[in-house]
Every structure is written in structure tokens, then in C-alpha cells.
Image (cartoon, rainbow over all chains, first blue to last red; front, top):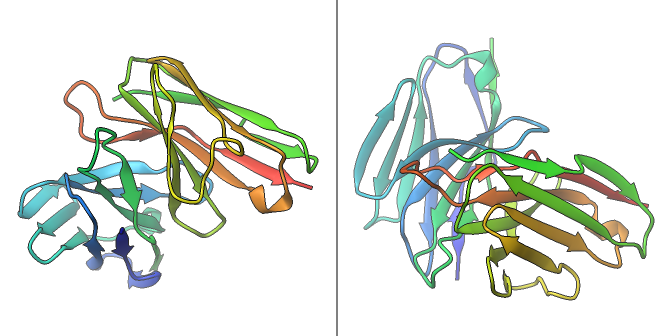
Length: 112
Length: 115
């Protein structure tokens, strides 16, 4: 079965750092993705991890531990525009579809 | 990365009718995917659309309710059949990565309201 969990909501202050966690139990694994989704818009790709460790891209970093079934997205120097939903997704290695299975999503509110 | 045009962007439909949603990709992609997103919720995969073969449906979704077409590598449709108010949701299509880009891209979504 597939189980991908994230905190439902988080609140942080402008200029601060926030870490959004994702734990997963899936039948197959071929990479973990993070997406940002503003209300009423399509998800946009943030990061991709397939090996253990940290991937850094500007203010955003993503970490993966395959043995622990754990990832986090780190957002630094928070801005008001970072208020959005953040979605963790696992690419299923089973079959030939390479489908993405999404977690529950985390709604981040950045306050002044 | 690929750019996807999805239409309609929104529609209000009568129960018992059907609506077909179209997605056009600006480049050839191997796989396309259809998701449903309830208000305030995450994305739930409906099916994977394969070119030249039948779509692969996830548990809880059936072809009679959500028939899918994938006539070529740049186009797919999802039909929501015999609609009920419970089908009110946002429907999104997605395409697998191409050209060395990792991220899956998404259409802008179709907001469906069934009355």
C-alpha cells in the first residue's frame, strides 16, 4: 500500500526558516518530489531527491533518507509569497508507469 | 519542461451529464496522468494514460466512470460520466518529465461543479 504523511498545517514568520516533513511507506520507490501549490493554481515543481542527502536550490533545500522513509523541505528567509500548500510525492517504481503518488499536503501560512 | 494546455478551466454541469476535459502538451511525452483534487485536499491519482493502450486505473476509479483517451503522445482526454454532485472537484492532468528535466508538469486544472 501507499502511505505518505505530512503535517496538515504550519505557521511561520517572515524571514524565518521552516522545515516541512514527509514520511512515506510505499510499495516501490524511484524518487521523491516536492511541489508548491498556491490556491487556485496548478502545482509547480520545487525539488527532486533520489539518493540520500541534501539538495539545495536557492532558498529551498530538500533532504532524503531512504532507509527511514523520510524527507523534508527546508525553506529559508521566508517571504509572504511562500504562503502556499507544499506537496510531497513519491514516484512509484512498480510497473512501467512512473506515476507520482502525492502526500496529504501541508498548508503553510507565513505571517509578518 | 513541457507546457500543458488544459480546457475547460471550469464548468458547471447538470447531474447525469458527462464532461470531457482535454489536455494538449507542447512536446511528446511518454506518460500522462489524471488527478482529482478536492477543495483543501491533496492530489489523488485517477489513472495513467498510455499512448496506444488502455489507461491504467487506480483503486476506486473505473473506466466506465472516467473513460480516458490517449490518441497520440501530445494529447489526452478525461471524461467524467453520469456526473453527481460528489464529482465536483478540480481535475488536473500531468505529464512525465522530458528532456532531462526532473519535474512532472501540470495543466492549470478544470474546476467542475455538478448541480
